[in-house]
Length: 266
Image (cartoon, rainbow, N blue to C red; front, side, top):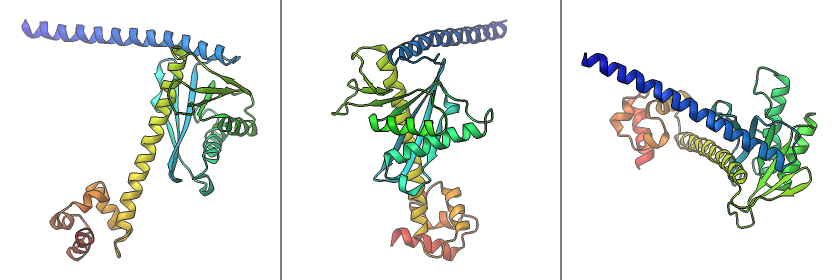
């Protein structure tokens, strides 16, 4: 009887959790509807917003340049729509405008070419940056025939402090009062884009460090490098491994293992 009672308790708790989750989603959805309407009203947008995409780029002195896209809809952040873009055009790696042009061009050109098989179009595009980034984004979308897709750029103040952002849309500048919930919302989705861009950049940089360390060991081919990275996870882990641990990697003979070990320890 006790067992039956315990099972019933678990089932009831699961039902309660499901209801709470549903109520929370409904509440957030209603709140988001109000925020979407407030954004449309603030920037005089003649669209019904259900989906926003935010773009940000990350690089350090032009290295490991990465573009990022995050999406926000009725029920919050949509992780399955997140995308990262490794910058392919060399001259864009140190050019913030060039990076934005490449990312937007690749994202929307593909959507046009693979209609219904790629990400659907958002109702609003937000880019991190000022008037210059707005102009580049607008120009890029216009070139693709997407004249009616609204764009808003969000720039921090001179002191880079949150709360003093200036927004650009359609040749006009916009400001919010510091306690405006719509401002908090826009900051929140901008910050998520920034976080995702930074994490994508760090992952790329870490991968680059791992590769470059092993590339410096003379006579270690791509198959052995792959075996080492698969076994240890990173070049840093290879560096801290013992000689016996390196010898245990499949395809790495004792002589080669000694060469690898000596490279990191001599």
